[in-house]
Image 1 (cartoon, rainbow, N blue to C red):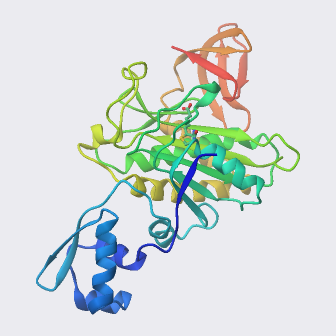
Image 2 (tube, rainbow, N blue to C red; image 1 turned 120 degrees about the horizontal axis):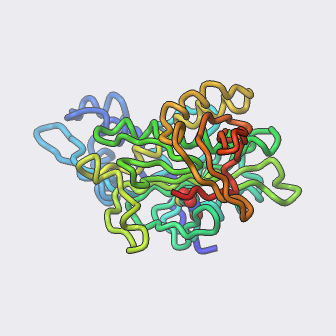
Length: 327
Ligand code: BTN
């Protein structure tokens, strides 16, 4: 598999975190909280600048004035205090698909919650065999999940991921995200993010899920076929957003929701999904196994799936995995 990893241990995370936290940091403050001074400080600042961080200096203080779209494992792990998701993070500068990389790592014994991030995917995959546009400037992330529960957890994981992504996007002003079942996150009716869950098929990977999350953060030029349907966060936020900042929020929210899934507590996830969903109450046409179903969406159940009152009056549950919603 084509893969280029960005190793950990290449930048000073405590220093970066201090610079990110405030306006100006004085040399004394830096020395107190990171132990860095003189030549050692200069060396670390130089290395941050080399990775694309713009650091201004004035008098005896320093300030972060800009940061690259790139991901750094040290920066992410330093800022996270999650229980499971993101305890281990692999950053790839370029990979065919983070889902493929995550499956390979899962096959080699990766722990529950391992996060694989890529700055660019050359063969990003979407649901139902579609390809997924994944240039630089986006957030392309896969997570190994081993909840120790039966396979019907896939629906709950999809819902939790949608909630975590929508919640994280909504923290940015102007980014009023909603969920469209089964796996789309929309802003102003256009798709800004998608989630998908793949289940392990081999005996050794039975009970393992790979959750793939793709968010268009700063890429504002799209291939012609998705141009009318797609959007980027930067368009709505009125400027670039750092993919690493969004990743950290999603990981944190997902960690909280995943622990609820593992405990079998789905009610809160279902309620938040409904509050964020643009699907419930709408008329919907669903294609499943070559059959067409029409009706009104009445509810969403984290285990059974989407509940639809069909035109016959019968209420039927649909799981998201094998369906197409026709507008
Ligand atoms: C969809 O809406 O069809 C789901 C898209 C999921 C895309 C993400 S990007 C990270 C991960 N790696 C992939 O190849 N796909 C998922």
